[in-house]
Image (tube, rainbow, N blue to C red; front, side, top):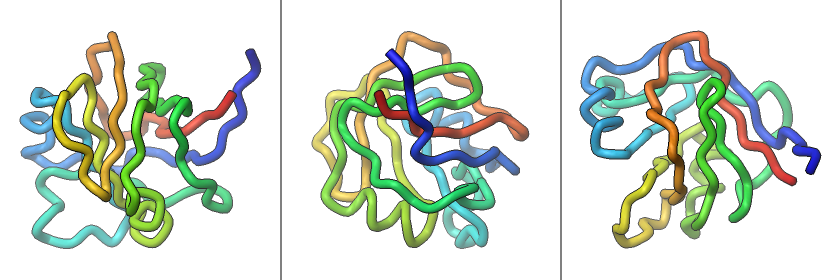
Length: 123
């Protein structure tokens, strides 16, 4: 099944406390400029390379070559992502879906690092 990239960027930096969030299955993306209060826990990117396309259930989120299957999208997730490049991705977590978050599943050991590709792809 062919996938189409609907959003793509590159990790420019990772906050010093972000690995603790990764260990808890939480990945917080933020486009530049990043608010000081979130810089220490964020995966920072410069924004999309092309026009924004809303994230949908069934999409795949890539961090480098690792993939997360999107299972739920909060009501405000796409608005926040479009306006701020900000979205919280909860992986393999059974928590209530927050309005600005997405949930997904993955079997990969996700360890983001600067220079890796970030992308949402759709079948």
